[in-house]
Length: 414
Image 1: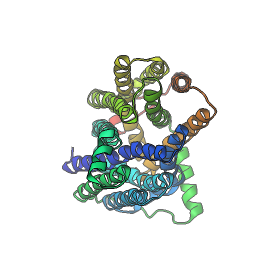
Image 2 (image 1 turned 90 degrees about the vertical axis):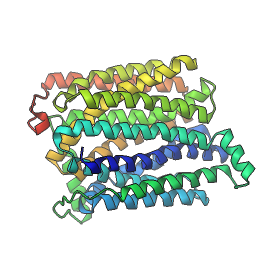
Image 3 (image 1 turned 135 degrees about the vertical axis):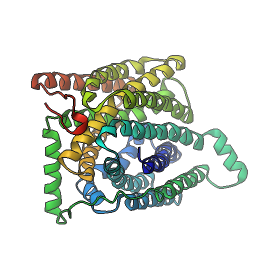
Image 4 (image 1 turned 90 degrees about the horizontal axis):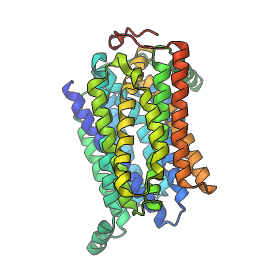
């Protein structure tokens, strides 16, 4: 891997770590305000809505601006959103600011990867990036759990430093600052793209064309986009559901639920690492049956009632998901940069994946508000994933869509 790649990994790791810790602190803020449990998905909705609303422009911005400079600025905007929350801004609005920054950050980050890493190493690069992202989820949830724990609350009270959760937000500001400093050490790739359209109609038209191109690609783009869209929508919903499930079914506190959530991330790290090492790009579609296994595990796990069984179950869910998503993500990036450009393809991917998150989280919040039991909701999510992957596999077989050797160099055939 190019030397700059590892510095990029470190910078995005700390930025994503703070994002995930912020979610736990945000839930604690809502509880402090006396809001009901079904408000928790609204935090994630506020964070994600910018990914969908800004999708037509963030890819063009990532291609038009130096990517490293853009990522550094977006870390600054994240810090501004957290700082405003510490000063009293409503958590939903604060998450909207942080989500806007993250929406601009993502296509720049993944676009830079496709610019500095050769196609033959994209699966390995995605193994690195997914492991770092999931490690940031793991440590982020642990840090978030620490920042809302009784120990932290008592320590801040003893020091007389004001509201403990405000002190938690200030601690996260330091992590965002570290991410920005690391980002400054990443050199630009030097690659430039043709001048993008500037009029709103042209921008929307360009995005529609790009989105249609990926969904119609029969050489791996359509299937990989379908799988990653399903995975991230279900994963974001599961992330919040596990926190509530740990408290309602297993009898854990919020910070302990965050630690249980982190065990999913441990599994994803293992699965992503194995996939990055052993799955070649032209074999990416062979991992589709793992989607069936993931759905079955998500269907069965909510009925576990003991912590001793919940821990390995969560690790296994994460491992299967990680092993599935890394090759699919690499294939999608490879086809996207061939069909479109680095920033535009990542923006299309982000739009679809985050639209899936919005829809699934919205449905989760509505069903919870209507009183649907959490265990049935989580099992229904697993059944949905299983059926969707089954349909995709049947359609793939009917259409004879496949990859042959040479895909890593661009010679994919279907």
